[in-house]
Length: 263
Image 1 (tube, rainbow, N blue to C red):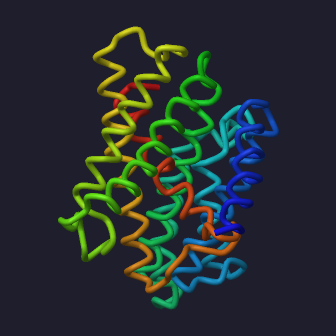
Image 2 (tube, rainbow, N blue to C red):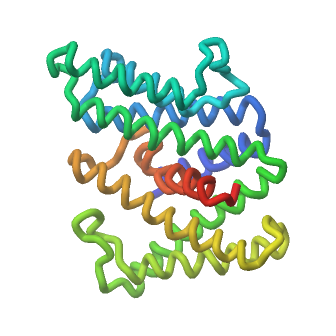
């Protein structure tokens, strides 16, 4: 527990400090976190990061991750997503050329993993560099962290009905509801001092969506770990596991709130 607290305080302070600082230091932090998360994910699949398969996975992920203003694709006269689709075709052709030593299953994993990690951290960067990006990011973090805390304490105090035992045996329906309730309460206090949206209805919808999809993102990562029979995604954060263990909710939330037009 002591190690967990020390890691949380030191790591959390550094993380929040770089968010506030923004610009290139924040961008480099996101790139580093995404790279570690991708490393953890392909290790679950037992793909060696420095193998051809591993390098291909990182190329796909960085293609979706890195902001356009940092690395432009105009020199090849293709939009970023067009290039991504082209590489998917090449990847599928590679399964034939290698006579399935690079299997269709591995190709599908590389594509899905790169979208999961790449887009997740990409839209975290996107949100930070909005005009009110700092307020938006801290609002999201407040909701996600309040949800985690509320779910933990409500689950321990009142949890009787399992939420999804095949995926995460310890999570309960009472915990999930408690997490969302606390997120809405803390989020409501937050916006009294730092209003993020002009409409109360939009704000309430935002809080509910972030809290619920954040919990879904946690279950998605739990499903990954259960499928690949690992306890933690990594050990980079002593007492907390890996980067995916800490950012699973956030990287699931960010693309969703972008697609829904909140950012």
